[in-house]
Image 1 (cartoon, rainbow, N blue to C red):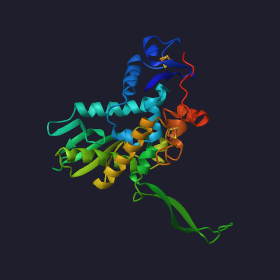
Image 2 (cartoon, rainbow, N blue to C red):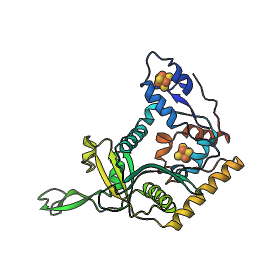
Image 3 (cartoon, rainbow, N blue to C red):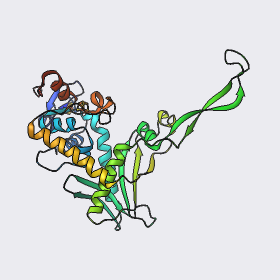
Image 4 (cartoon, rainbow, N blue to C red):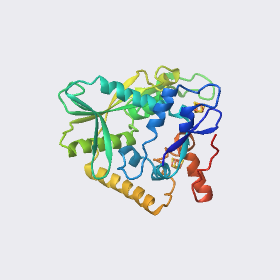
Amino acid sequence: MTATQFICPNQDRILISQCLSTCPHCIRCMAKPTLETLAKSVADRKLGRKYSVTELISGTREQYLKKTTDYAISPQDHVFAMHGSAVHSICERSSSGNVITELRLANDIYTGQIDSYGDVLGNGRKTLLDYKVTSSYKAMLALGYYREDVPTGDVYKSGLKKGQPKMKKVWRTDGVKKLYEWAVQVNAYRLLLEEHNFPVDDMYIQVYVRDYSLRMASERNITQPMYLLHINRISDQWLYRYFSAKKALLDAALKSNTVPGFCSSRESWNGRKCAEYCDVYHECRQVYETGLPDTSSKVA
Ligand code: SF4
Ligand code: SF4
């Protein structure tokens, strides 16, 4: 099944087809072409086709619910996802002859779309490049930035801390890069390329920071709109094991019509994804409360 309803700003639910035909409110909450693009982007969740890399990386429960229930999405919450699609199509249009873009490949386990492959960085190396549009917070974590207390050289002259060194916060850029999902995704694409005889020397993610101009971003040491992140190789054996296991879990759940357990803390971003970013949060809670998905929500 698929996303069949939009959630209006006043929280009414409306069938997507009805919204696109006529908005019952006095003015649309966003332009019709934007809503049409959004409707297309969430429509492709049919059963029977191969799973994509991103579907297998996300929680099995989330994917099961997306494939077996009709759910509703808020257009406002999906605007940033459309920024990502827009970046992809701009880069695809402007790519040159020795670079392959938007190449869709598949193996026995999954399918994946390669954003850019070839000598994309002009260093003569075959590079796989993936584009990401993200927040300054996620960029800070992915870049391994963190703040540390260092002595200023002064000491407190009076008060409770008298005699103790004064400290100041400084940024470090050598922290652990928190980009597990991105690294697994790009390596899965790398494996697809190599399986189809496209050798890969390097992997990079080109990160666009959507809020880089805000003060909050500079407080996170994010000062550029775009960063290039080198991605390390993950072993092929690990990738095969990981994706085969995720595929088997989803296959088994769909075949037996059994709702999988809650997503792991990594899959649900320690629970942060659930209420704020998961499209099937409502359905997930319904299953928990009643044992069965309830898709009979109010439809305008
Ligand atoms: S989601 Fe559709 S129906 Fe609802 S306010 Fe926006 S345009 Fe109107
Ligand atoms: S609400 Fe949380 S646990 Fe439920 S499917 Fe979504 S991410 Fe997984």
